[in-house]
Image (cartoon, rainbow, N blue to C red):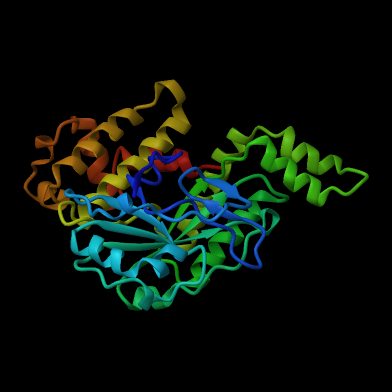
Amino acid sequence: MRRIEPAFPDLLPVSHRLGPPPSVAAGRTVTLDPVEMRLVWQVPPRRRGVGDRSVPRRPVRVLLHAGLVRQEHEFLERLLEGGCGVLAMLDGELAPKSLPAPTFEGQAVVLAPWLPSFWGGAALPDLKPWRKRGVAAGVLLCLGPAPEPFDQVNRGIEEAKDAGAAFVLPSPLSLPPEDRHKIYDGLAGEGGDEDLENLLFHTDLGQLATDLEREASRACRRAGLPEGLPGPATSVTPRGTFAASAQLLLWARRLDLLDGVSSAGWQLRRAAQALLASRREPQALVTEDNLRVIPGFTPWVEAFARSAWSGAGEPFDEVLARWVAH
Protein backbone atom coordinates (compact mmCIF):
# COMPACT_ATOMS: atom_id res chain seq x y z
CA MET A 1 0.00 0.00 0.00
CA ARG A 2 1.42 3.35 -1.05
CA ARG A 3 0.58 6.98 -0.42
CA ILE A 4 -0.84 8.76 -3.44
CA GLU A 5 -1.35 12.34 -4.53
CA PRO A 6 -4.37 12.44 -6.86
CA ALA A 7 -4.24 14.80 -9.81
CA PHE A 8 -7.51 16.35 -8.58
CA PRO A 9 -7.44 16.03 -4.76
CA ASP A 10 -10.61 18.10 -4.39
CA LEU A 11 -12.47 15.46 -6.39
CA LEU A 12 -10.77 12.30 -5.11
CA PRO A 13 -9.79 12.83 -1.44
CA VAL A 14 -8.13 9.47 -0.80
CA SER A 15 -4.63 9.01 0.57
CA HIS A 16 -3.45 5.48 -0.34
CA ARG A 17 -3.64 2.94 -3.13
CA LEU A 18 -3.32 -0.80 -2.76
CA GLY A 19 -1.32 -2.31 -5.60
CA PRO A 20 -0.25 -0.83 -8.94
CA PRO A 21 -2.32 1.08 -11.51
CA PRO A 22 -4.74 -1.17 -13.39
CA SER A 23 -3.76 -3.29 -16.35
CA VAL A 24 -5.89 -3.29 -19.47
CA ALA A 25 -8.45 -6.07 -19.26
CA ALA A 26 -8.69 -8.75 -21.94
CA GLY A 27 -10.66 -7.55 -24.93
CA ARG A 28 -10.14 -3.88 -24.05
CA THR A 29 -7.78 -1.33 -25.59
CA VAL A 30 -7.61 1.14 -22.72
CA THR A 31 -8.51 1.65 -19.08
CA LEU A 32 -8.19 4.52 -16.61
CA ASP A 33 -5.83 5.37 -13.79
CA PRO A 34 -8.14 7.43 -11.51
CA VAL A 35 -5.23 8.79 -9.45
CA GLU A 36 -3.53 10.52 -12.37
CA MET A 37 -6.80 10.63 -14.40
CA ARG A 38 -4.81 9.30 -17.34
CA LEU A 39 -5.57 6.65 -19.89
CA VAL A 40 -3.70 3.38 -19.39
CA TRP A 41 -2.85 1.55 -22.58
CA GLN A 42 -0.67 -1.23 -21.18
CA VAL A 43 0.86 -1.83 -17.75
CA PRO A 44 3.09 -4.87 -17.12
CA PRO A 45 1.89 -7.02 -14.23
CA ARG A 46 3.67 -6.39 -10.93
CA ARG A 47 3.34 -8.32 -7.71
CA ARG A 48 2.85 -6.49 -4.46
CA GLY A 49 5.73 -6.63 -2.04
CA VAL A 50 5.55 -8.07 1.46
CA GLY A 51 5.78 -4.59 2.92
CA ASP A 52 2.43 -3.70 1.38
CA ARG A 53 0.67 -6.19 3.63
CA SER A 54 0.87 -4.20 6.86
CA VAL A 55 -2.48 -2.86 8.06
CA PRO A 56 -1.97 0.82 8.97
CA ARG A 57 -2.11 1.71 12.64
CA ARG A 58 -4.31 4.67 11.77
CA PRO A 59 -7.26 3.97 9.46
CA VAL A 60 -6.78 5.43 5.98
CA ARG A 61 -8.89 5.73 2.83
CA VAL A 62 -7.64 3.19 0.29
CA LEU A 63 -8.29 3.02 -3.44
CA LEU A 64 -7.94 -0.31 -5.22
CA HIS A 65 -8.94 -1.85 -8.52
CA ALA A 66 -11.32 -4.66 -9.36
CA GLY A 67 -8.62 -7.22 -10.13
CA LEU A 68 -6.97 -6.70 -6.77
CA VAL A 69 -10.27 -6.99 -4.91
CA ARG A 70 -10.59 -10.48 -6.33
CA GLN A 71 -6.97 -11.42 -5.57
CA GLU A 72 -6.61 -9.93 -2.09
CA HIS A 73 -9.88 -10.82 -0.40
CA GLU A 74 -8.22 -11.87 2.87
CA PHE A 75 -5.99 -8.81 3.13
CA LEU A 76 -8.91 -6.55 2.26
CA GLU A 77 -10.89 -8.12 5.10
CA ARG A 78 -8.05 -7.17 7.44
CA LEU A 79 -8.08 -3.59 6.19
CA LEU A 80 -11.82 -3.32 6.78
CA GLU A 81 -11.53 -4.88 10.22
CA GLY A 82 -8.78 -2.35 10.97
CA GLY A 83 -11.21 0.49 10.26
CA CYS A 84 -9.88 1.57 6.86
CA GLY A 85 -12.24 2.94 4.24
CA VAL A 86 -12.23 1.36 0.77
CA LEU A 87 -12.92 2.93 -2.62
CA ALA A 88 -13.09 0.09 -5.17
CA MET A 89 -12.87 0.88 -8.88
CA LEU A 90 -15.18 -1.21 -11.03
CA ASP A 91 -12.70 -1.31 -13.92
CA GLY A 92 -13.10 -5.05 -14.41
CA GLU A 93 -15.54 -7.80 -13.60
CA LEU A 94 -16.41 -7.75 -9.91
CA ALA A 95 -19.39 -9.29 -8.15
CA PRO A 96 -20.73 -7.61 -4.99
CA LYS A 97 -19.98 -10.76 -2.97
CA SER A 98 -16.29 -10.45 -3.93
CA LEU A 99 -15.96 -7.39 -1.70
CA PRO A 100 -15.77 -8.31 2.00
CA ALA A 101 -18.67 -7.03 4.04
CA PRO A 102 -18.07 -3.56 5.52
CA THR A 103 -18.00 -3.37 9.31
CA PHE A 104 -19.91 -0.05 9.50
CA GLU A 105 -22.04 2.20 7.31
CA GLY A 106 -20.28 4.00 4.47
CA GLN A 107 -16.97 2.16 4.87
CA ALA A 108 -16.97 0.86 1.28
CA VAL A 109 -17.79 2.75 -1.92
CA VAL A 110 -17.56 1.52 -5.50
CA LEU A 111 -16.90 3.75 -8.49
CA ALA A 112 -17.32 2.75 -12.14
CA PRO A 113 -15.32 4.80 -14.67
CA TRP A 114 -17.22 6.06 -17.70
CA LEU A 115 -15.21 6.94 -20.80
CA PRO A 116 -16.67 8.13 -24.12
CA SER A 117 -16.47 5.50 -26.84
CA PHE A 118 -14.15 7.93 -28.66
CA TRP A 119 -11.55 7.16 -25.96
CA GLY A 120 -12.22 3.43 -25.93
CA GLY A 121 -14.82 3.35 -23.18
CA ALA A 122 -17.10 0.39 -22.53
CA ALA A 123 -20.62 0.07 -21.14
CA LEU A 124 -21.14 0.69 -17.42
CA PRO A 125 -21.77 -2.33 -15.19
CA ASP A 126 -25.08 -2.74 -13.40
CA LEU A 127 -24.70 -0.89 -10.09
CA LYS A 128 -28.05 -1.85 -8.59
CA PRO A 129 -26.78 -5.08 -6.93
CA TRP A 130 -24.17 -3.04 -5.05
CA ARG A 131 -26.79 -0.66 -3.75
CA LYS A 132 -28.99 -3.60 -2.69
CA ARG A 133 -26.04 -4.81 -0.63
CA GLY A 134 -25.82 -1.42 1.07
CA VAL A 135 -22.66 -0.22 -0.71
CA ALA A 136 -22.76 3.24 -2.28
CA ALA A 137 -22.12 2.87 -6.01
CA GLY A 138 -21.48 5.71 -8.42
CA VAL A 139 -19.86 6.71 -11.70
CA LEU A 140 -16.59 8.52 -12.34
CA LEU A 141 -17.52 10.58 -15.40
CA CYS A 142 -14.32 11.18 -17.39
CA LEU A 143 -14.40 14.44 -19.32
CA GLY A 144 -12.25 15.12 -22.36
CA PRO A 145 -12.34 16.35 -25.94
CA ALA A 146 -14.51 14.32 -28.29
CA PRO A 147 -16.84 14.96 -31.20
CA GLU A 148 -19.99 16.63 -29.81
CA PRO A 149 -18.52 16.67 -26.28
CA PHE A 150 -21.59 18.13 -24.57
CA ASP A 151 -23.82 15.43 -26.04
CA GLN A 152 -21.28 12.89 -24.78
CA VAL A 153 -21.54 14.27 -21.24
CA ASN A 154 -25.33 14.10 -21.27
CA ARG A 155 -25.15 10.57 -22.64
CA GLY A 156 -22.82 9.61 -19.80
CA ILE A 157 -25.24 10.96 -17.19
CA GLU A 158 -28.13 9.08 -18.80
CA GLU A 159 -26.10 5.86 -18.79
CA ALA A 160 -25.12 6.42 -15.15
CA LYS A 161 -28.76 6.81 -14.16
CA ASP A 162 -29.80 3.74 -16.16
CA ALA A 163 -27.01 1.73 -14.50
CA GLY A 164 -28.39 2.60 -11.06
CA ALA A 165 -25.71 5.06 -9.92
CA ALA A 166 -26.35 6.76 -6.58
CA PHE A 167 -23.97 9.62 -7.40
CA VAL A 168 -21.73 10.96 -10.17
CA LEU A 169 -18.20 12.34 -9.90
CA PRO A 170 -17.30 14.39 -13.02
CA SER A 171 -13.55 14.72 -13.49
CA PRO A 172 -11.36 15.94 -16.37
CA LEU A 173 -9.01 13.57 -18.13
CA SER A 174 -5.31 14.37 -18.12
CA LEU A 175 -4.40 14.00 -21.79
CA PRO A 176 -0.70 14.43 -22.59
CA PRO A 177 0.26 14.75 -26.27
CA GLU A 178 1.26 11.08 -26.58
CA ASP A 179 -2.25 9.96 -25.65
CA ARG A 180 -3.82 12.36 -28.12
CA HIS A 181 -1.43 11.16 -30.83
CA LYS A 182 -2.47 7.55 -30.21
CA ILE A 183 -6.12 8.42 -30.68
CA TYR A 184 -5.38 10.55 -33.74
CA ASP A 185 -3.21 7.90 -35.39
CA GLY A 186 -5.90 5.29 -34.82
CA LEU A 187 -8.77 7.35 -36.24
CA ALA A 188 -7.37 9.81 -38.79
CA GLY A 189 -6.27 7.36 -41.47
CA GLU A 190 -3.45 7.88 -43.94
CA GLY A 191 -4.89 11.08 -45.35
CA GLY A 192 -5.23 12.76 -41.95
CA ASP A 193 -8.30 14.45 -40.47
CA GLU A 194 -8.25 18.22 -40.05
CA ASP A 195 -11.28 18.35 -37.76
CA LEU A 196 -9.84 15.66 -35.51
CA GLU A 197 -6.47 17.42 -35.46
CA ASN A 198 -8.11 20.70 -34.44
CA LEU A 199 -10.08 18.95 -31.72
CA LEU A 200 -7.11 17.18 -30.17
CA PHE A 201 -4.28 19.65 -30.68
CA HIS A 202 -5.76 23.11 -31.20
CA THR A 203 -8.47 23.15 -28.53
CA ASP A 204 -8.10 24.94 -25.20
CA LEU A 205 -8.35 21.74 -23.17
CA GLY A 206 -8.46 23.53 -19.81
CA GLN A 207 -11.42 25.69 -20.80
CA LEU A 208 -13.17 22.76 -22.46
CA ALA A 209 -12.75 20.67 -19.29
CA THR A 210 -14.33 23.45 -17.21
CA ASP A 211 -17.21 23.80 -19.67
CA LEU A 212 -17.78 20.03 -19.56
CA GLU A 213 -17.75 19.97 -15.76
CA ARG A 214 -20.41 22.65 -15.74
CA GLU A 215 -22.47 20.78 -18.33
CA ALA A 216 -22.18 17.63 -16.21
CA SER A 217 -23.58 19.55 -13.23
CA ARG A 218 -26.52 20.77 -15.28
CA ALA A 219 -27.18 17.24 -16.53
CA CYS A 220 -26.93 15.78 -13.02
CA ARG A 221 -29.44 18.30 -11.72
CA ARG A 222 -31.85 17.42 -14.52
CA ALA A 223 -31.42 13.72 -13.78
CA GLY A 224 -31.65 14.15 -10.00
CA LEU A 225 -28.21 12.61 -9.41
CA PRO A 226 -26.02 13.95 -6.57
CA GLU A 227 -22.43 14.93 -7.37
CA GLY A 228 -19.33 14.15 -5.34
CA LEU A 229 -18.09 11.25 -3.24
CA PRO A 230 -20.24 10.19 -0.25
CA GLY A 231 -17.40 8.07 1.21
CA PRO A 232 -15.49 6.04 2.13
CA ALA A 233 -15.73 6.52 5.86
CA THR A 234 -13.20 5.14 8.33
CA SER A 235 -13.60 4.04 11.93
CA VAL A 236 -12.41 7.49 13.06
CA THR A 237 -14.09 9.59 10.35
CA PRO A 238 -17.85 9.03 10.05
CA ARG A 239 -19.54 8.97 6.67
CA GLY A 240 -21.31 12.27 7.32
CA THR A 241 -18.04 14.00 8.13
CA PHE A 242 -16.36 12.75 4.95
CA ALA A 243 -19.34 13.58 2.73
CA ALA A 244 -19.68 17.10 4.14
CA SER A 245 -15.96 17.74 3.76
CA ALA A 246 -15.96 16.35 0.21
CA GLN A 247 -18.82 18.66 -0.72
CA LEU A 248 -16.88 21.70 0.48
CA LEU A 249 -13.80 20.55 -1.46
CA LEU A 250 -15.91 20.14 -4.60
CA TRP A 251 -17.20 23.70 -4.34
CA ALA A 252 -13.74 25.04 -3.48
CA ARG A 253 -12.61 23.69 -6.85
CA ARG A 254 -15.60 25.19 -8.62
CA LEU A 255 -15.05 28.60 -7.08
CA ASP A 256 -11.44 28.46 -8.26
CA LEU A 257 -12.61 27.64 -11.79
CA LEU A 258 -15.17 30.47 -11.74
CA ASP A 259 -13.12 33.21 -10.08
CA GLY A 260 -9.47 32.41 -10.73
CA VAL A 261 -6.97 34.21 -8.50
CA SER A 262 -9.74 36.10 -6.67
CA SER A 263 -11.45 32.87 -5.62
CA ALA A 264 -12.53 32.23 -2.05
CA GLY A 265 -12.12 28.52 -2.68
CA TRP A 266 -9.08 28.33 -0.41
CA GLN A 267 -11.31 29.24 2.53
CA LEU A 268 -13.63 26.31 1.83
CA ARG A 269 -10.66 24.00 1.28
CA ARG A 270 -9.06 24.97 4.59
CA ALA A 271 -12.34 24.47 6.48
CA ALA A 272 -13.01 21.13 4.75
CA GLN A 273 -9.61 19.78 5.72
CA ALA A 274 -10.03 20.99 9.30
CA LEU A 275 -13.48 19.36 9.51
CA LEU A 276 -12.05 16.09 8.21
CA ALA A 277 -9.22 16.21 10.77
CA SER A 278 -11.65 17.00 13.59
CA ARG A 279 -13.73 13.84 12.98
CA ARG A 280 -16.78 15.74 14.26
CA GLU A 281 -20.26 15.11 12.92
CA PRO A 282 -21.17 18.28 10.98
CA GLN A 283 -24.92 17.92 11.41
CA ALA A 284 -24.51 17.77 15.17
CA LEU A 285 -22.38 20.91 15.05
CA VAL A 286 -25.00 22.64 12.89
CA THR A 287 -27.77 21.66 15.31
CA GLU A 288 -25.73 22.94 18.24
CA ASP A 289 -24.85 26.13 16.30
CA ASN A 290 -21.25 25.20 16.99
CA LEU A 291 -19.52 25.02 13.59
CA ARG A 292 -17.14 27.80 14.59
CA VAL A 293 -15.24 25.44 16.88
CA ILE A 294 -13.68 24.00 13.68
CA PRO A 295 -10.73 26.13 12.46
CA GLY A 296 -11.44 27.99 9.23
CA PHE A 297 -15.19 28.29 9.70
CA THR A 298 -15.42 32.04 9.33
CA PRO A 299 -18.93 33.58 9.13
CA TRP A 300 -18.90 33.35 5.31
CA VAL A 301 -17.63 29.75 5.27
CA GLU A 302 -20.17 28.74 7.90
CA ALA A 303 -23.00 30.32 5.91
CA PHE A 304 -21.80 28.63 2.73
CA ALA A 305 -21.44 25.24 4.44
CA ARG A 306 -24.90 25.40 6.01
CA SER A 307 -26.56 26.37 2.73
CA ALA A 308 -24.55 23.87 0.64
CA TRP A 309 -25.29 20.97 2.99
CA SER A 310 -29.00 21.80 3.05
CA GLY A 311 -29.06 22.34 -0.72
CA ALA A 312 -30.39 25.90 -0.65
CA GLY A 313 -29.72 29.34 0.77
CA GLU A 314 -27.13 32.06 0.45
CA PRO A 315 -24.28 32.26 -0.40
CA PHE A 316 -24.47 28.77 -1.93
CA ASP A 317 -27.40 29.65 -4.23
CA GLU A 318 -25.45 32.49 -5.85
CA VAL A 319 -22.40 30.28 -6.53
CA LEU A 320 -24.58 27.46 -7.83
CA ALA A 321 -26.44 29.81 -10.16
CA ARG A 322 -23.15 31.02 -11.63
CA TRP A 323 -21.81 27.48 -11.96
CA VAL A 324 -24.80 26.04 -13.86
CA ALA A 325 -25.51 29.16 -15.94
CA HIS A 326 -25.19 28.68 -19.70
